[in-house]
Image 1 (cartoon, one colour):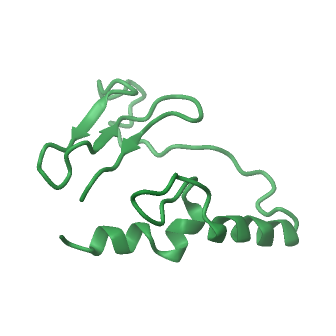
Image 2: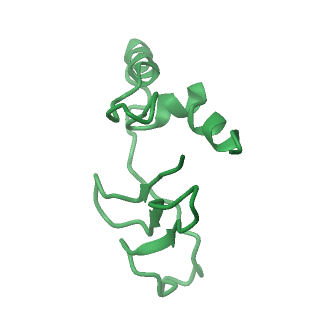
Length: 105
């Protein structure tokens, strides 16, 4: 299979920013040591940025009326052999919401 996706998702930068990471398919998703180190280094310089916020980027019509896409629903579902079980969802409000399940072989 094409390794480009794996190369991106397993890059040091991605491992620092992803909330959970898998080193191997059989592993349990956990924070990567690179992420832990990244946050340790942020603490060393005063927990920068001090006023971080959760935010989302909307790619909609820009008129305040929305685009008719409901939050938290399936947007893309993988049906091919290599991606069966992959699911991307539209963003829901609030933390700890499922937005993607990525599967592959």
